[in-house]
Image (cartoon, rainbow, N blue to C red; front, top):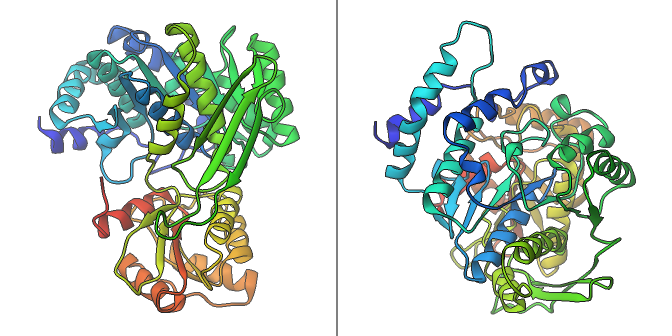
Length: 458
């Protein structure tokens, strides 16, 4: 088969990114089928060291920082992330390069006989899912490429995620908040315990600062599993500050961050290539994970120069991503924030990073399974105007429904467009002649669609 046929074959398996799992589906999820597929394929996930990251917000950014730092140290680094913005292959990279089409097809052909056997069973057992297959393609590719280390991002939750069969050098947990409640639970305690499902006995874990309820749940789970757990802000000291704005150097003010351990006597400092001071927490977890790998598999200390270079050179599209445009147009940013907490962070950061801009207009679309009321409340706290649209994902909530909810919440109307081109045009008009900001947000699928429309794919 060719690459197009390979994509179609993958689409023949259930894809919870297009139809999100709900609580009643949880009983069908175990690691049994994932472990069976791994065994059939020769346990490729055990062929190289791994770093494993879960969390509600920032886990992709954390993985990108860790991969970039280790790459700057001269290593061959695999990175597995999800979802993709432009092309399926961007989920599986080695040293920043997507898996090529021929390798993707070859590896899927290798998996196909096993997948067909597994889904032909008549015993009622659950068939492999789209994400589980993609995860094994990543494992196989990293083994084929003989990476020095692979950085693996959890897809959903942690305990029952396909990635959780790895035996990592270290685990990371980024900030935990409310998301996927129908599947993970509706309290921070329940959600944190699902994320903590990646903990392994004796494998050190580092967490970003957490709300008290989430921190307590992580600590309890770590004690139950025999996982040494540390927290940024408690065991590791993090400081971050915004550099003065340099209009000719970057569209946003940059963050300088310092992470240190008084107990162990080490310190790292870097200027971050991702915008927003909140990224410092993701960076801190990433630095510690990279250091854990280095101490176990390399000699000496993790090079400070690699931390500085990798932190500055990191690229993670769709996260406060600046899109260059023609002179006179409002500044355009893309961010995949899709819950209340991440929306507050992203829009608040734009206000902080560009205080010279008079108006902030948000172009928003979100999925049906997201708490759209909470998301819209966050938008109302920051935006001067709102334009509603939708991605092409079947899970997308209609812009008309969002407009109705916005009217109920604020007493204000917001234009709704099925076309993202029309939505962007209206947002530009509302933002003013180059004097404002336009932020496209609410969904990584929407961000990916806008990037494709603007031909901004990598």
